[in-house]
Image (cartoon, rainbow, N blue to C red; front, side, top):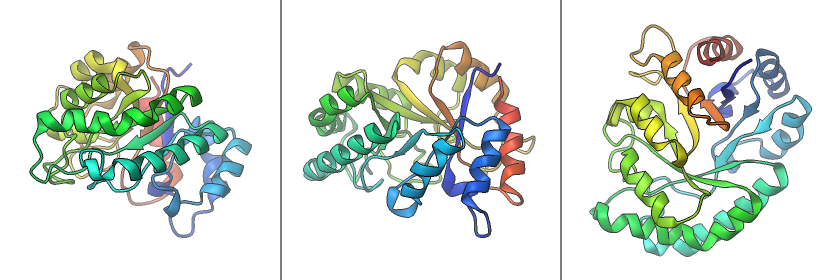
Length: 259
């Protein structure tokens, strides 16, 4: 039996000409246990809340607040993000969504040391609501070298420090394996050492954020085995680009990660 609960980011696979219900049905038949979205505004959120359970899928994750680049590290955003997160937490509670994505924002000259506490201050006012709803707030780790220049939460150690500063078991990280391969490598050791602070994973091949195949440098079976051995029981979501049939790529990724 698989020990990795696999999900997929709908925005990567719901392409023009792809029927949503057929995609969800096919993913469930492959063995997926969840689907996820980024922002609700760009997704068929209401339709998904109806169709995903019908086809045996949970909605695993969605963005909790706006603006990847202008996020928690700016105190002027805290009131806005608080209101957005409270709304998202309530929707997550209603629809059994275990994780909401949060963003540090770009540095824009801000000091890394000071920004740990600023980000923590931005999250503390909503943590009671998250705890009562059973929802993790997952700060996303992204690379600032290739895809997101200037993004502040670009190393695991910094993200872990924010989680500890928040002081709640519901403050977690979204550990994107592709992004952290670019920024720091040493994936298995870092994941193993930081697993208590990780609430969700994303995958993609490096370089070029493609499929998890022999053209990329990450050996995903070993990474998945480390995640499974850690006792992690939430979701690993596939988030990569590709050419061809979405279900064929979902089948291949599921097989690679079915540890």
